[in-house]
Amino acid sequence: METEGTGGMAKRMKSSVEEKELLALQDGSVVEVPAEDNVVTSNSELVEMEISHILEKINNFTQMVSELLESGKSMLKELSNEFEEHMILIHKEQMEKWKEEIKELRALDTANEETDALLQNATYLIQNIHGGS
Picture 1 (cartoon, rainbow, N blue to C red):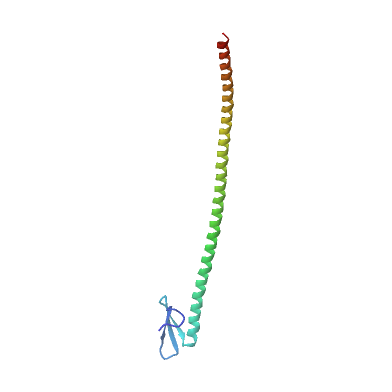
Picture 2: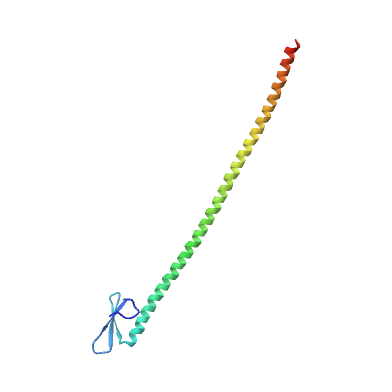
């Protein structure tokens, strides 16, 4: 017969003539306890110990989850900062490349304008030489 409130953790068996009972624990050990009055107390103590153990597990697990969350947040923040720095660097490098490209295009345009002016002057001179003779 299982005791009340233990969920199958211990079994009670009536002992001989004396008002004592044997309490068979889950781990296989047998404890002799006085009759009915103290069994409730003993079972209650066992239940309270089990509850206390479960509560300790809950606290430990909650602490571990909290630490993991904080660690994860910290890692994500560091990763986010590194990503941001890297993106800013890429942007800066690309802006420099395009600025250099614009500078080269302006220099090329200036050189083309100068060459065009020289060619127009040469054309004018050639036309004047052939036209004047």
